[in-house]
Length: 613
Image 1 (cartoon, rainbow, N blue to C red):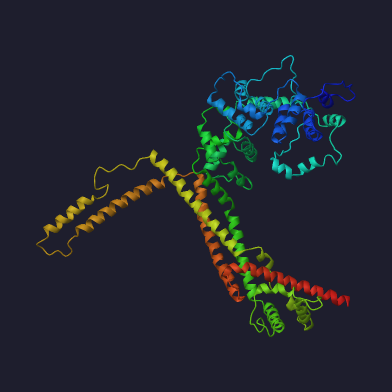
Image 2: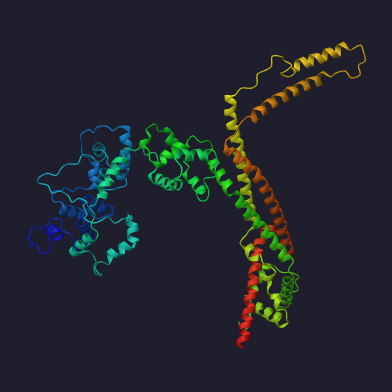
């Protein structure tokens, strides 16, 4: 037809007159149809173009013309009619449960309106069997001799990986894309012509390299693997494991199980370990797998070594704590000491008292006769307002006035507060509440280490006791300890036989019973302690025991520093007349630091003005 020749004929080709088309499009419809003709011209499959037109809400008349232009032999019918009268097909061979699992992925792709050609290509690329492809998409009918084969997605260029937007009609009307459609008649259309398309194919042509073949081979190999883990997750674990090339998977698992007794996992490596631990879902998948190791990838092989370790997450946290506890405790202690020192510096500053007294007097003079005049104190967060309150001419601030007055009275050194606050800058980066929180974290880490030490000893003791037996009871009952019942009966008998006489201290049957019970309990404890002393724990337990003993004293010193810092901060808050206790000190110190810096900058500004004059 004339339209087909206009769209598909090569440039310069001689066009023959054709019979008029029944469904002739209007000028406005032609503008809409141009977009989809270009999609066909770029090699997009007919089904994909038709799906796009339906999704965009294009009139069925335009859809019919586009489809007939691309494939005159194709019989177009409305999708609603097609859905109402589905074609009968031959019964399909049922799929197994495993095949159904594979097929469900591609059925979901169809549900989200991905074209069949794209789904078929994806299934073929991933090595899906023809049986599953036919079950999902139906058998592909081969082209007849008289029928024209629809254009396939065989672009000669590399793929542009962009994210498309499928807008609803209402959203599309409000978008920039709808505005461009309306202005097509007014603006010159900028679209690729034949020469442009040829250049595009030359520049971005696909590389027919061995890589594509190896990719297909890899897909075939991967299809036979167990695939227990998500591929991205497995790749990330494999990358992290490269930091442990000096370990085998088994030796790394054993090292973690015994808390790294030789301290081989240090530095950044100790922070990698938590990312290498399997989730409960992954543990279940690895445990369920009963196949051979040669079907497992790196991450799955490593997880297989880890699943037998008890309390693995706690052990990894204990390893991190042993590696970082000392350094973190020193940082927290240093922070508490800095807060304590700066509080003392502020409270002992004579210069600060002089400056605040002067500010108070100036403020009362300025506010005389008002409710804010004649006051005895002011809030420290009012200090920044000294730089914000300006004179009538807008050239001088209250702070400038105070600095000028102090310098002219020969008290220039009073303005340099930072000389008396050497730790002020460091303290502004600290917060007493944050330091307390850090100490609480250290406490929790210590408790975890202590609990893990008890668990390890219990685990290893139970194994030792199961392989050894308690000392045999002596044949003589006296050697095994007194019998409480015999002691009780003997005491009663002795008391009855001496009823007529006046004994000095008649024996009490209850005391005899309690003494016998205590003696028997002491014998049992002695036997258990004897067994305990014969147990040889692993090196990791010994290392953890030493750490727990040492960290206990470190924690005690840190808590003492905290108490001293909290007392100092509370004292400073009271000294400055601030509410909020130790929690308000961080803001207070920041205000003082900024004020001290403002004083020094004001002095420089005064000196520069004097030099100019």
